[in-house]
Every structure is written in structure tokens, then in C-alpha cells.
Image (cartoon, rainbow, N blue to C red):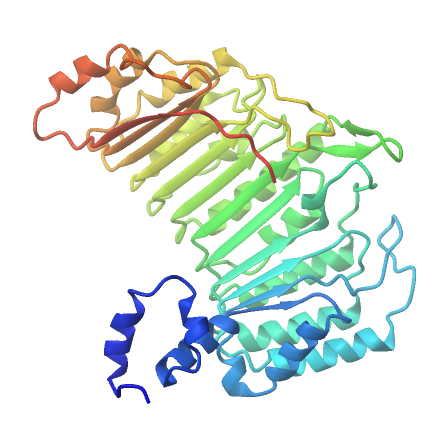
Amino acid sequence: MTIDLPNEIWAEIHTYLPPNHELSMIGFNRYFFEVAMDRIYETVCMSDIDDREQTKVLQQLRHPQVASRVRHLQLSPCFLPLTDNRGKETQPVSSKTINFLDQSLKSLCNCTRLEKLTIRFHFFRAVTPQFHDFLHTLLSVVAPTLRSLVITTSVVQLTIRFHFFRAVTPQFHDFLHTLLSVVAPTLRSLVITTSVVYLGLMAAVSLCAPLLSLDTPGLMILPSYFAASERIVQYVELPPDIAQCFHEHARSLLNSIQPSLRSLYITNHDLFDLSPVFKGLTGFLLLETLEYQSCSSVESLSDATSFCGFVKTSASLRRLSMRTSVYALWSDGPPRHYVESVSHFDNLIQHLFQLHLPRLHGFLIQFPQRPNISAIIANLPTFSPNLEQFVVVSRGNNRLEQPPNGLLEFSRTQNSSSHLERIEFRQPKRFSP
């Protein structure tokens, strides 16, 4: 027999328990039963028709009380039929798949408190009319509560064992356009991972209904590879018209969400110049977090003023992170590493420190080589007088037996009103997708 206490007291006791300990106390009392059930059904996966455990969970979601506990749906449709190299189905949709979609939809439509939907598309899988209707109906039901949508196309799973240069067909363009239009009113987070050649993907996103509530977008640009043979992958130089079209789509997307944008994450793993995109961006008054990572080639951001001009228009910026990519995305494929341009980076830093960012509290910067700390620290008071955290990432910072030149002088010259609390030095980490 358990002690009869208010839920508020049990909630306070719960905070002192180890993580996930509530699962072992599911039969202790009503409070821990509800907490454990919320944890069990918090995330639901739908990927395999023959997975008995997934089928069992989907059947349990027929009960609205159980389905209301689901917050995150992970949808990985590996059960869809295969396609050829033109995106056409090589086999018809099986009756088993159609029945699985119908039965799953009846269960998932009960998830009236769903907050996050993750969709991972697989290689050689067709977006069939049945699956299109399945998603359309599901999103129509869960749209009022949905706050985050993550779409990952097959391009993120690149490997040299496959022919991955696939066209974004008109059907997929329409599918994605409809998908985003349905969830646009409440969508908060959108992550896009693609290469520049997938123009149809960016077009579908940039041309959809205004994403008025989107405040945390992420854009990762992968290298533009193509399969020269079964086992050989080569990098392809982009024609000027494709690059220009990508610039227009990216600029259109960012400008459309400008009123609500608070955080922006851009990772550029391609030898691709994004300066035309930054030149066309202005008035991001609510942007608080900006993280930019590039391979820092001679071509990337060749016009440093474009990026710095974008930073300058972000009057509310509080956290700024700038990194260079040193390692290849795939260890068994080209390129083995990126060639960093020290002169280009110095030019970018020179333009950046001419700015005045009074609201900036956190600043992380990764250098191609060990930087001149003295020159950098000397600019901090005018660059960001309210800076609280300054992090330097450099391959030369593996061991610091004594403070860098300029650090002690900087500390002595700061009066008690200085906001700087921490200066940290790190080694760069290898990127592994």
C-alpha cells in the first residue's frame, strides 16, 4: 500500500530519481503509472510491415487515451515499392502495403497531441499515390499541434556503392509542396539536407505557402557528386545557371521566413559560393543565433562583405558561430580533405571585426591555423562590448602550457564592468554524419 500524497509531492520526489527510473516504478502508484506510460509512448516508429513490435504498438494506438501520449512519430517508409533510375516504380504496390497504410492511418489519426514528425526517405523507394494520400490525411489531422518537421531525402545517405544522382520528379515536387503547405501555419523547425543539383527540392520549399511561424531552419549543402560508374564517384562542377537558380531559391526561402527567424544553421560542405545568397538578405531583426560552417575554399564567400553585411543587419544577434570544415564527409570517397584558405579566412575576420555587435553574448570561431590571439582579443571590446563567452577552435590549440600572447594584457585592462566570463580553446572535431 502506497502513501496517498498529492501529485505535486510525487512530482517533486520524481525529480530526485535517476533518469528513466519511472519505468521500473510503473506499478507503484497512479502518478508513476502515468509518467511511465507517457515515456513508453512518447516516440513511435513506423518503418517495417513485418515488425511485430511496431504492429503491436500501432494497434494499441487505436485507443485514443494511449495515442494521446505520442509526441514524436518517426516515419521511415522502407516498405514502399522500388524505383528505377528515372524514379518510376519497378513493381506495383502490394495489397499488404496498402492495408498496412490504411490500418496505420486509423491509429495515427488518434495522435492528437503529436508535436514532431520525422520522415526519412530511402534509396530507390517510390512515393506512391497511396503514400501521398496517407501523409496528406495524417498531416491534416495533426497539423494543429505539430511544431517540428524534419524531412531527410535519400541524398543524405550517400555512399559510393550506389548511383545516388537522382532527379526530383514533378510528382515528388508536388508531394513536398503539398506537405509543407499543410503544416506551414504552425511549423517551427525545418531541416533540409541536399546538394545544389537537387533544385527541385529547394523550389518546392521556397514556393510553398508562407512559413510564417518557422523560426529555426537548417540548411546543409552536400558536395555535388555523380556516379561515374558502379564504384567511382566524382565531383561535378556546377553550371552557372544551376548555381544562380539555387541562389534564388535559397534567398527566397530565407526572406520569406524573415519575420519569424530566430535561429539559422548553415553547413556548406560544397565548393560553392553562397555570397549571392547573403547579399540579398536584409532585415533579420529577430535573429539571435547564427551558425555557419563551410569548407573555407578560395571560392566560398569570396566576397567577405556579403556575409558580414548579413551579420550587420541582424541587430538582435546573441550567439555567432563560424567554423571551417577540415575533413571529408565520407572517409572512403572523395574528397579526402578540404584545402583551407588562410588568406580568405583572414579577409573574412578583418571585415567581421569592423562590425559592432552590442548584443552578442557568445562567439565561437574556428581558425584554419593557430591564430594571432593578441590581434583578435584587441578587437573584442569594440566588436562586442557585452561578450560573455569567447571560444577559439584551432588545430594549434591542442596544448596550452601558458596563456596566449595578449590574454593577460586583455584581462588586466578590463575593469569590473566587463561582461566576459570565459575564454576557451578547443581542438576541432572530426565530422561524422
